Length: 82
Image 1 (cartoon, rainbow, N blue to C red):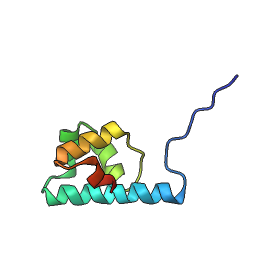
Image 2: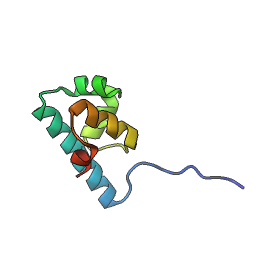
Image 3: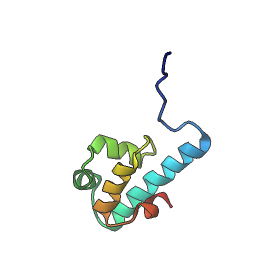
Image 4: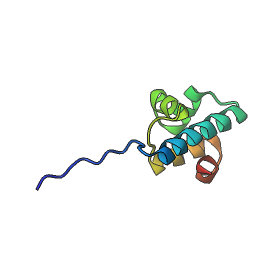
């Protein structure tokens, strides 16, 4: 039996729209806190490239990554995923 690897990047229009909204909320929260994306990446324990991709609406972050970013911003995950 062969197991297929499951694709994790957003596929549907709803998933793509959600990730774009998430990226916008992260960028907005960072701007409100006057935190650069570079600093947020450092504080959140993620790479700059990964965070830039999220802010641009690309990627599929795990809940752990969202928890780290929210913690670094001093907000709740629900504030980001709204």
